[in-house]
Length: 609
Image (cartoon, rainbow, N blue to C red; front, side, top):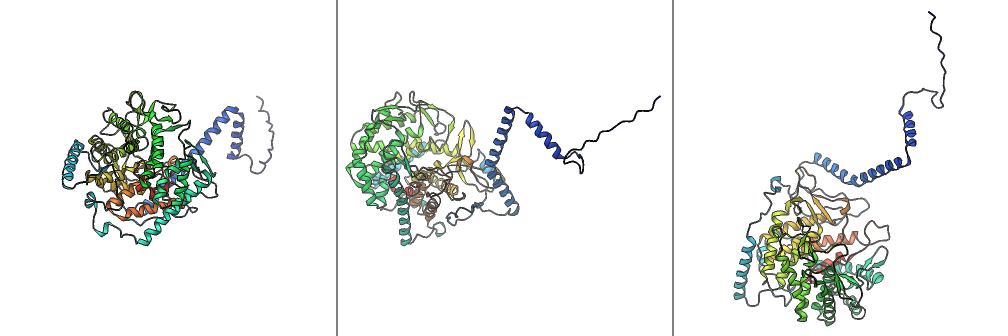
């Protein structure tokens, strides 16, 4: 046998590997991955890059929430005995918001209170009928004892010169611990001047860049048109009168007299035109007695009437005020419930002032149709209604937020406006409040803030719109007018929650929507999603603060309103800088033709940049 032949070896030297040789390093493998990447088709590489970009964007979006949560966990480990609401962390580029010193909220002692079987205030079945009967009886007795005391819509609903009586004596607590000392007169005067200053700031921008147009765009220093009817100008008339801005008022009045015309081939939204234009003109007429504003109100009111020419008597959402043709939105035959049930105050008052009954008859018919419809849940109504058959659509979703909110508000205000005589309105309102207590009312964790969530096909969601903050004021107004005293208690709890929606934010301004934590071990009560981190300068919280202060005389509500105004001034004025916010201010009205009593406070915050 021959011995094995000698094997020859070939030595290969690679650049960069002479020292150390091949060591199975990761660097060598990365070169292999790059070859694999180059072997992929263009489509495959594009798909992978898209996935990576999406993951990166998702990471950026969730990073603030994750870090805040982790920070909260760390704080909880180091300070487990703290009972205070976690204070906000202020970015270094933002000035610290103005805050009123307030006592810490106690933590909830037991989460058992949050179960659906044990809510803070339980519904008592049949309570609405009992209260209606009691109110009827009380009204008769009061009418016998005090001639002329019963409120009538043939005059002002609230006399700012007289002390509130009745329910306020029950609401008021004389304990000095519960009420802050009244402000000195000079301090009140200086604050009022600050309100005027804030209004003048917003008004000067509107006058300079968008005079006679609907809305100001303060960043681009131009305007936007919705209907082309000077929405902001008309909506601000009564505010200027109340603030004593006579020069500004006269300029605006001259525009109304010479430039405002409704003979235009333009589609307008029935709801927005009613609360902003018709309501603004009626409020200004009541304040000034100037027939110009009543004439203009009658003109626009008559042009809106074709919207009610539907098979169901439920009005269309849009109407061409030049051609007199109404129609639903282009994409559906439905109207939102809040829109068709939040025009009644203005049309009823227009009918009274003009002695033309068709205005009130049209809107009263809407309320009668809603009253007898099926599809409600404990007085709560769906968000949409079909204008052809007059039936609810999209049933199973119940909220006091967008598309349903002002239905509940207007039930009570119509009842008061009509002299508290329409017990159908009162019954619907009381049933709805009991439905809120039964289905939507919950408490947050860890501090037990009372909030109003939403119900979707039997599933509760701890989501609360800023719009829902109309409810504390509405409940207080009802309690002040003889409705159950526990409505005032609930109003105070919800008012605290709405205030916390402001004070717990970095800027001291509430987001559009918040979500409440309900689980044991939560670090903070309120969470805000990325898409909801904006403030539209809405008036609901400020209106409710007005009512609570008026009816309880507790000066903390006055202080809270002042704090909110200061933060609006601090953070929402447009400056010469790259904007990080939506650059358009809305001409929100407060959804009531009696809104002139509080708009001197409200408009200073929502008529801003």
